Length: 127
Image 1 (cartoon, rainbow, N blue to C red):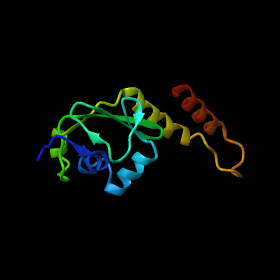
Image 2: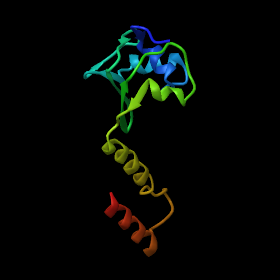
Image 3: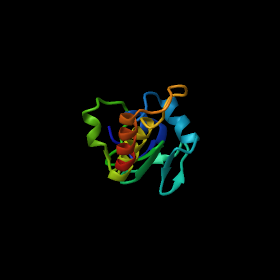
């Protein structure tokens, strides 16, 4: 099952980070996948112990390669091949983005009421 090397797009697909291998290749070609600070092509070979950074705005996910595999496995078995090491600060960025969506008011809804204003102020204080 595990060999010396495997293509980046095939590995990302096999560990279920992307639904299709084509999506994984597109992400690599767009520069969203980096290793050691350099964006990688889909044909680059992955090695055990490397840290893969995947940009999915507003977050940057970090994964460490534990072992290589060529075939797509169930989600439970993927944990043996890849571990997520994303810092907590990145997850806070995602939460802040969700809170900011609540701050936008639809055009034409009029002035906020006193209650709305207090809710908006509480959200601003939490951010």
